[in-house]
Structure formats: structure tokens, C-alpha cells
Length: 204
Ligand code: SIN
Ligand code: FE2
View 1: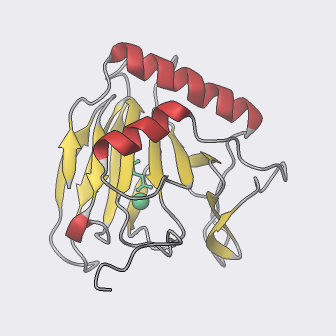
View 2 (view 1 turned 45 degrees about the vertical axis):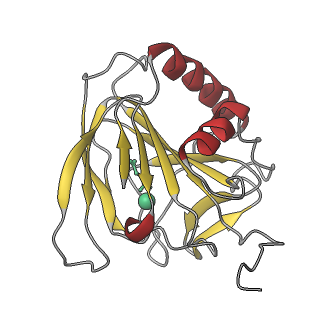
């Protein structure tokens, strides 16, 4: 894991927030539900990029269209593509940017990001708004975990052995940032979903 705290200064956070607000007017936040039972998650979501992560009764997956509007997701802003290039040395651009919106009581249980075919690419996360307590474990659900605070402007890279590590968000600390107009937090995760085609086989 690599934590850059902060990575974005105030002006860059504001500029990114404006871009995310614009995306969310085109692709409104939806309420994902758990597979099978359909219990709603406390986090609301949207996406940008050719693919977006969704969850409903049929399961977790990536889809090219918004589940409520049926429209393609808006493109990933150039500023986010530039951050991906700066912080990862990955050979291909991200295909999905999941936008998580946490109201003060929202949280996300321990999980692994495993719906991507490409497990070599890192997951790059950017935080805006109130502080969150992030929990990072290992490859086993019941293994030891550590927790730390993610602040507005922080960039966290889950790479190497942490790419498939259990992680979650225990809680939000409302009122710790004035970036958003109300208490809450936005987290963006940039993901490569498909395996890049034309990958060179260095052993040949
Ligand atoms: C996630 O794992 O999907 C979100 C992580 C975060 O909100 O920091
Ligand atoms: Fe995750």
C-alpha cells in the first residue's frame, strides 16, 4: 500500500469536487443493494468511465450503463487519468471510477475488490470531505487488520500484496472537513477491469 497524505491540495480538491458534482448530475447517485436479499447498502454510488461497478439482487458486476437511467456512464475526467499516470506505473488507463458517497452514518464492511479480470493493476483511491477510518487486513477474512484515517485529498494505492486484501470503512467523522457543503465523504476508486490487450510477453 502507498498512502499520499495529502496528495491533492485544497484547490485541487475543489476542482475535483466540481467535476464529480457535474458527473453526478448526469449519472445520479443510486442505492446499491446486496446480492440475493436486496438489502440496501448505506453508501450511495455512481461511476464514470466505460464501465461502472454496480450491485443489485443479481450480484456484483461491472456494467457500461447506469442501472436507473440506462445511459452510458460519463467519461473519466482527464484530471483523474493524469493522477492515475502519476501514481501508478500501470501500462493501461483505468476503465472504471466508482464514486462512493458516505453520509455521516454510512460505512462499508470488510470486502475484497475482486470483480475485475485484471488483478495486476492497482486500485487507486482518492478521498474528499470528512475523515474516515479505513481498515486494511490481509488475504484472509478473519486475519489481523490495522486501521488509519483517510483525510480529504489523500490518495491511497492498494497495490502488490494489498491488491487483494480485505478492506472497509468503519466510520465517518462528520464535520472534520469543510470541503463539501454538508457533512459526509466522497471516495473515488479508479480500477482497471479488463486485461489490457496486446500485453507484451517479456519471456518471448
Ligand atoms: C471501497 O473500498 O469501495 C471504498 C473505500 C473508501 O471509501 O475509502
Ligand atoms: Fe473496495
